[in-house]
Image (tube, rainbow, N blue to C red; front, side):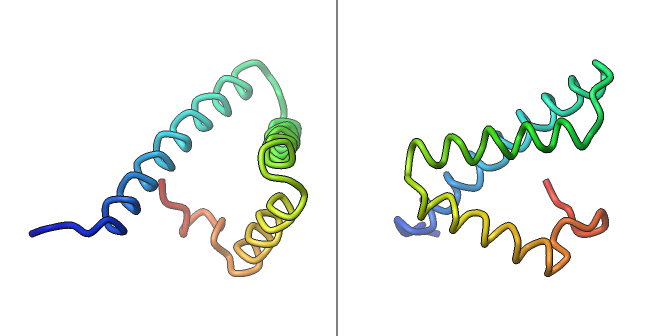
Length: 85
């Protein structure tokens, strides 16, 4: 079966996403092991992410990401039984 360019791009993007999730999960676990509360880890992660998005892509891109994340929260995408890594 031959994959189209879009299929290959989607596979590469998913592999990158999974690698990022693994890296963030390790950092989260290290923070917890150091006695840092989950709320503090989460806030620091979000501040870092949005700061990097602003620097790399500007305010419009950062706000679009914020909107997408808000919609995912409303849709229940982060509920424990629906999380997938």
